[in-house]
Amino acid sequence: MTRRPSLLVVLLTLAAFAWRVQGLARQSLWRDEVDAIYFATRHLPETLRMFLSPGQNGPLYFLALRPWFGLVGSSEFALRYPSALAGTLGVILVWQVGRKLLPLHLPDTLVGPAEHARRAAQTHAQARGAQDRAALLGALFFAFNPYQLWYSQEGKMYALITTLVLLATWWWLEGIARGGW
Image (cartoon, rainbow, N blue to C red; front, top):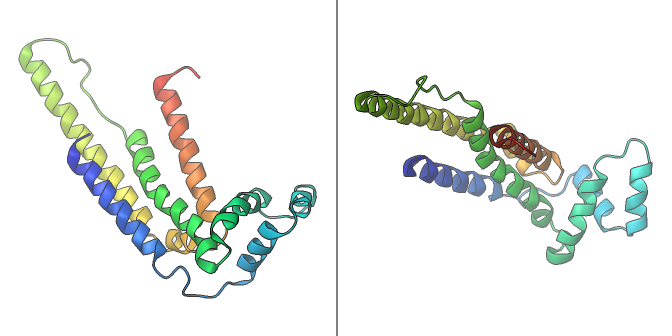
């Protein structure tokens, strides 16, 4: 990877973070967010019973919020900030998954005369550049997607779920590429 795509990804990630964090506490809490705070801060046995009750939405998320609220409190900003972080991390993961999924067409062989090897290396660099640009475009679309912004500013588990799916996909593709466990 060249220095330019990685610098662009860093700048894009910082812009996505700024866009997600601005105005996090502007709106008051809505009902589901109040429920999230209530479920995360009530007595632990009550929250754990949610695992046994049908129709409960996100008990693991509420358990994850407990230590966070213990550190920073349970304000609008505190509730929504983990979603903003997850949505921002999603930008990087879309770029990584895109780089893994987009085909990199290489010549059949890299051995042979010096000229053939030089052309093959040049073709590889051009293909890698096209692959990086396409992955960067996907990350750009993800970073500024209105729905991703919405979920990244909401005190629910949706941005986290998206990011965890992207992380699992990236690890799965890494496992395929590397082999073994």
